[in-house]
Length: 330
Image (cartoon, rainbow, N blue to C red; front, side, top):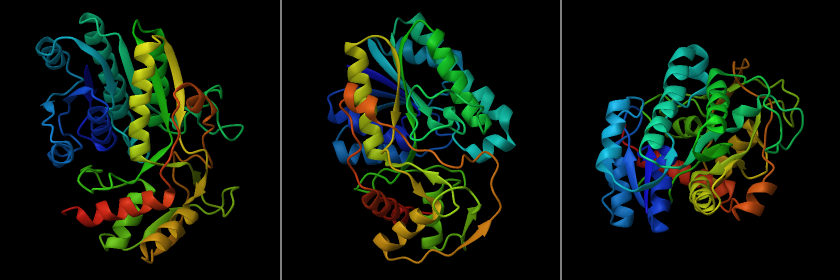
């Protein structure tokens, strides 16, 4: 069964391609490597023995994506990862995010409808909830004002999917960390890391001098922001579960994908230090635009309907993240 995977060479995309292969699907990757690397393709082949078909195509360009659909007959569904992902950058460059993140989904949906592909799994985000009124957040929690243009694009894309003619599941990710235990695939982003765990890893490696903790005056356990950190392999597996469910139950739906547990910035630092035996130099800085104070997931719905649950510990995720960082070539 052929599944088109946009952004399939990226961080979450490559791990999901790996899980699709394990479950007997035939992934077809569309990725122009604007923020990824063929290293992940090589890693997938080493792990699975499968040379995945890859199109070096910009999925926001109608003609290029149409050629992929013309070449690949009988595609059964799509998983859409291709998008810019930095909350921090989106605050500085909002138009870049509006144009790419929304535009690429619209082009993909146009081609899916044209070629009668009726099922899509969408890479959404917990940023759609803005600053929530209650914790943990459930799928019925209302969309609040997004704290960043990145979050706005995810809200808009979910609204587009609700009105489209295709069956869809939007997966609202919390904070993916770690990498495959082999260290053969991982986050190959060319951008300077803006997320906590990759920054911690760079400090541990000596690539940067210290971590700047963005604010310690929030109303949380230690004054720093709280997030729900999920291992990227668990996250990848949720896409396969969602795809199987959608193929059997054609509909529109949304699911939270997290662990259900919140961890503060300083708690994450100390977890990393403990499991990897590396001291992390940090200092307290001002709050960062776009950051939500505290958010973590209620997983009741996804556990019941998709029979999915996060299984890999935060400790293992921190270990895998550090092992990947040590393997990276600068």
